[in-house]
Amino acid sequence: MRKIQIILFSFVLLFTISCNNQTETTEKKENPRVQVKTTSVTQGKLPDYIELSGKTIYLNKNTIVAPISGYVAKVNVQQGDKVLKGATLFTMQSAEAFVMKQNDNLSKNYGFIKISAPTTGIITDLKVVQTNIYLGEASVMCEIIASNNIRVRADVPFEYQKYAAVGKTCKVELPDGISINAIFSKILPQMNEQAQTVKILADLNASIFIPENMIVKIWLDKGIKQNAQILPKNCVMTDALMTKFWVMKLINDSIAVNTPVKIGNQTHAQIEIIEPVFNSQDKIISEGAYGLSDTVMVEFIK
Image (tube, rainbow, N blue to C red; front, top):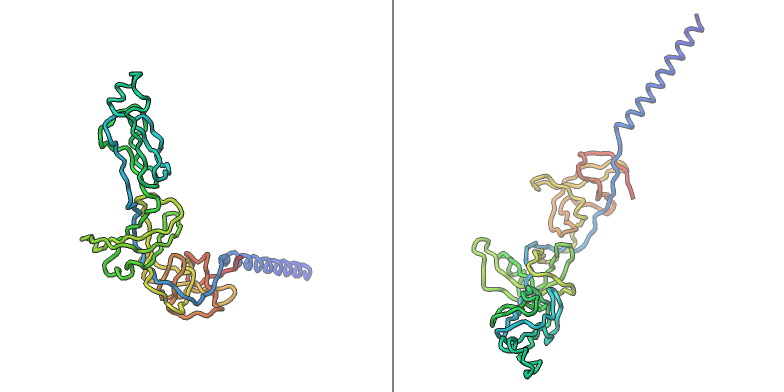
């Protein structure tokens, strides 16, 4: 009988240990840790930008027209070609010379007129691509834009006009993310009645070709704020209405908590934190914070 009791006791003990191990394993599985990357606040200067929209335009355009009525003898250019000032674009022959070209008594060069580029630029809107076609006088043959004459036309709200005064600088961001410096050069005497915006031209300092009518972003600098508390922009979470903002701050090596913040100036990559005041040892989640609950277990990844 005693042997049976000992066997039953051993069985119960093993069963209890097994259940405890399963419970610990289950608890571990129920509390997975989120992998995150962290950063710390920095102190520095954060520009206060106003984001506006604009469009690229070429002011210096030259429309090339037929100087006479006649036939096109040569076409020396193609759409998009870069040409130098004085380069021969087309050669035309007068209608009379074209009809009489079978007469051997006439010089082979009789009645030909060369049409040259009035400026250095790029051929756009090429109308004439074939030879031996008839054109009337003043018929449009092509258009040349001066490639060094690119401008950006900004639509600036009247109350921000002081930040876009002639001589002030701005940054122009192209759709592919490239940023180019520009200088405001001319205020046009026009205002959009509905939007109450002023059209202001800015000269682009660009070494690459930029097409006309490209929609771009224009960043006006309202000034520099000293000693700003700065975080990368992806550290800050917000609600759907963008009325509440928060970061996920680590309170120890494994727990992060929701910390409401008040934001200030921001650029496309950085944002100012006005409140609360963090110190350089505080760890803020920079990657992996989206969708986390108010308190969560985390682990660091490099």
